[in-house]
Length: 320
Image (cartoon, rainbow, N blue to C red; front, side, top):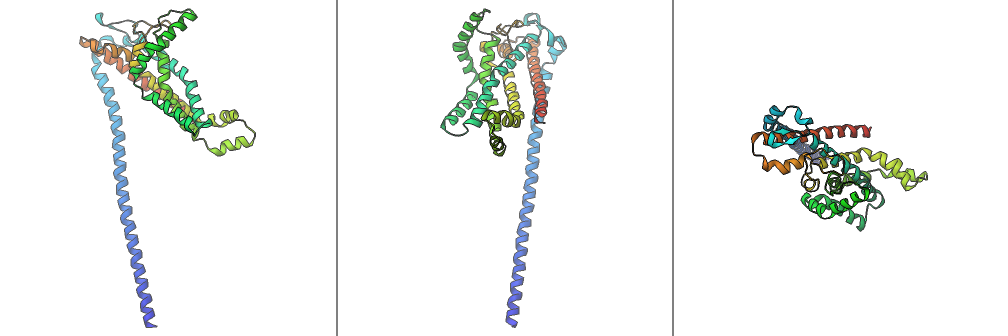
C-alpha cells in the first residue's frame, strides 16, 4: 500500500513537471512569436513609409527641377496653346488634350473586350487547355515591349486606319489620335481582363446555384448575380488600365503624329505629354526648355494622381 502511494505520488509529480515544461515551452514560443511579429510589423511599416517618402521625393524633385519654367511661364503653362521652344513659349494644353483623348478613347475601346475575356475565362470556361491558352496569351500581351507595339502599329495598324479614314471621308494620314488609341486599347486589355477574371471566379457558388434553382438562365445569372457582385473589382481593373494608358510613351510616340497643334478631331495627328518628353528631352539646349519639359512631367504626374483619386472614389461608390 505504501509502495502504491509512493508510485502514485511520483507519477503526479512527474505529470506536474511535464505540464510545467510544456507550459514553459509554450510561453517561450509565444514570446518568440510576439517578438517576431513586432519585428515584422516594424518592417512593413518602414516599407510602407518608404513608399510614401519615395512618391513625395519624386514630387519634390519635379517641382524643384521645373521651378525655372514655373517662374517664367506661370499658370499660362496649363492653358497655353503654343509650344515654341525657340521663342521660349510653352503651352501644354494641346498635349493635355491629346493625353486625355488617347487614354479615354482607348479605355472605351478596350472595355467590351476586357469584360468579354473576363467573363469567358471566369464564368464560361474556367478550366481546360483552351482557357489556359487564352489566359496565357492575354498575359503575354502585357509582357510585349511597347516599342514592338509601335513597330507593329506603323506596319499594320496605320495602313488599316488610313483605309478606314478614306472610307468615311476624313483626312487619310493614318497616324493620329485614333491610331494611337487602338494601340493603347490592345495594350491595356490584359490589366482589366486579368483582374476581372479573378473577381468573377471569386463569386460564391451558392449564389449562382440559388439563381439557377429559381430557373435563371446563364445570362440572367451573369446580369443579376455575377456583375453586381464584381462591379467594384471590374471598375478597379478599368481604372488600372486607365493609369497604364496615361503614362504610355513609345508606342504612342510612334503612331500619334507628333504635332504641337491642338487636335481637331480624333483622326487628326496630335501629341501626348509623355511623347513630347520622349521626343524633345535630348533636344533641350537651354535651361528654360529643359525645365519646361520637367514641368510637363509634373503635370502628367498630377493628372495621373487626380484621376486615380477620382477612380478610388468611384470604386468605393460601386462597392456600396
